[in-house]
Every structure is written in C-alpha cells, then in structure tokens.
Image (cartoon, rainbow, N blue to C red):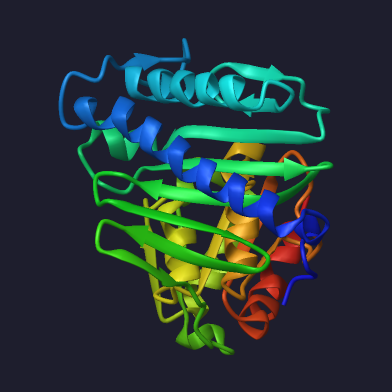
Length: 276
C-alpha cells in the first residue's frame, strides 16, 4: 500500500468541510458541461499541427469551478488545464481538469470525467473523479474513498489481483501517448495481462478504485491529469507510482495505478526499462 497521505495533519472538521465543497465543485462543473454533451460544444483545436481539442464545456466548467473557489477560499491557489496557475505555491492548491477525455466527450462517449484534486502543503490530499452524465462522483482521501450517486453512496475498495496474468488493464491511446520505448513496455504488459481496454482516460482510474479493473498505465500526464486520482486510489487501498515505482512527482509524467501491489510489481519489471 502507499504511505499515508498528509491529510492526517488536517483536522477532521476541516477535511469534511473540504470534502463537501468538492461535491459542490462537481455540481457546478456538471451544470456547465451537461448542456453541451452530445450537442453544440464549440470545438476548437489548440494545435496548428496535430489535434488537441478543447470545447466550451472545458472552459465553462473550469471557470465555474474557479469562481466558487475564489468566493469560498480566496487564499487558495489553483492550477488548471485551461486557465493556468494562480498562487501555485499556496498552502492549499486546487488542481483542475474540467473535462478529462475531451476526445471521448466530442465523440459522445460517457467516458470523460471532471478531475478535481486538492494539494495541502504541496501534496495531493483530496480528490474526485466525476462522471456527471452517469451521475457518479468518485471521491476520497487517505482515510477512505466512496462513490456518490443520486441513490446514495458506498465505499470504494480495490480488489485483490496479485498476478498480472489475471489483470484487467487500461491505457488511453498507446500509439498516440507512448514513445517508441514506452510503447514497447506497454506491449509487454498488455501481452501478460488477461484483458486490456483502451480509451477510458481517467474513468479507468475510478474503476481501479471501484474494484472492477486492476491496473492503468499512462505516460505524458500533466499534474491535472493525475493529482485527483492519487488520494482517491489511496483511500480505496490502491497504489499510484511512476514507472520506477516511486511516488508521483508534482508534474505528472509516466504513471501506473494499481489495486494490488503484487500486480504492480510485475508490471514494473517491464515499465522500469522505459522509465524517464
């Protein structure tokens, strides 16, 4: 298991307050996103060469989240994919990806998520993965994780899977996201695993926490792609590391998320050879 995250230094009333506010942020993001899903979402390509889509849903959701944070906690910092950094060295910093999986979003697939993480003194301590079309918010910290739906909530727990040969694994798009050496490492891991799913983006992280998947391997991630998942996975009993098996740094990079340490260790045999 991962070492306990530093939210133990936060008094329980403060942690509960921030947890409740995180649900408010998810509702605000959903209000901005859902009217545009499978509709006129205002697609723009960020790149002159290649394709990196952004929509009005991405921008509107991040604006809504930032407005609530500024009103409630004006001394908190924010790092967001769409609007950059504001006081990134503050004691509390929110890390935002308003629509992770924009390609799924524009294709009408309900695999995109809203990622909201909170750093305390530089470390991720609270996070959520929200899929508002399905009415799900996966939320947690080192003390425990849960999924919240309109029917109520239930705790999240990873499942035992000590052997990679029994694992259900995922990555987003191996040909687009991995370098040649990274693709070779992924190919080895995939060849050993029972089943692989592609294109799930961060929804796959939530499925590891929920105990339906066992391992996610990604590369080239930014902080906003992974910060929200680290405390959520830890609270469900899982592990998040880089490809060397070390803690994830503040800027993302090559990431492995697993429900079972033994399964992760088997995957790291291949991943370490291509670790940056």
